[in-house]
Each structure stands twice: as C-alpha cells, then as structure tokens.
Image (cartoon, rainbow, N blue to C red; front, side):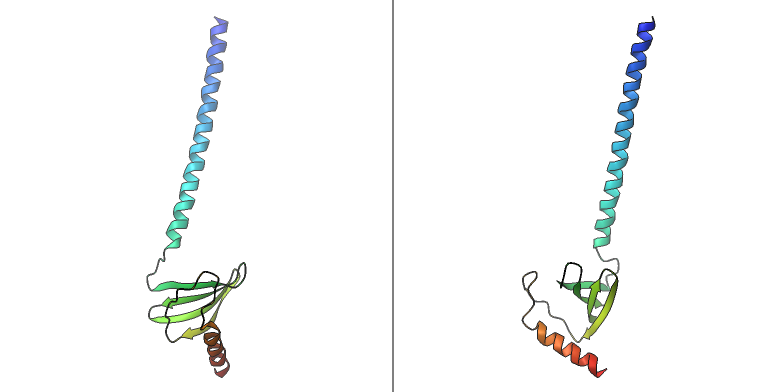
Length: 120
C-alpha cells in the first residue's frame, strides 16, 4: 500500500511540474504577443494629420525626416535625445532614390534651408 502512495505522489509531482512549465510558457507567449501588437499598433500613425513622408539616415542613430502636419511640410533633424526643426518646406515631392542615397537636389535644398535660416 505504501508503494502505491509513493507512485501516485511522484506522478502528482510530475503533473504539477508539467502544469507549471506550461503555464510559464503561456504567460511568456502572451507577453510576447502583446509586445508585438503594441509595436505594430505604434507603427501606424495615430493621427492621420501627421505623416512621416521620408527619412534619410545620417549616422547610426541620426536622421533627417520630412514630415507633413496638416497641409505643411517640415524638415526635422532626429536623434534619440532630441528633435530639431531644420526648416519648413514650401512643398515636398517624393523621389525614388535608393535607401542611403541622397537625392540629386538635396544639397541645393539644404543650401536654401541654411540661407533661409540665416535670414530669419
């Protein structure tokens, strides 16, 4: 009779261990699913009047962004610690340049922006 009690106790402990592992994996899976969902939900613009139209990497963590807010266009400098207004653009026409390549008129636009900044 004692042998039967020891066997049922051992299988009960195995079932408890299996349930604990299953529950832990389920909690981890739900946490990962929530994190992915939040990232995907954050990827879309919450406000349709604010759109990032283009971005150009300048370094590993620095970028220039072209942003449309309502009917106005802005060139912004972005780093992880701050966002700076470079200039407001009169208009913006997207170009089909490869990632990492600067558009042909970029230097001209930058010169105009700098001149406009000095004048104000």
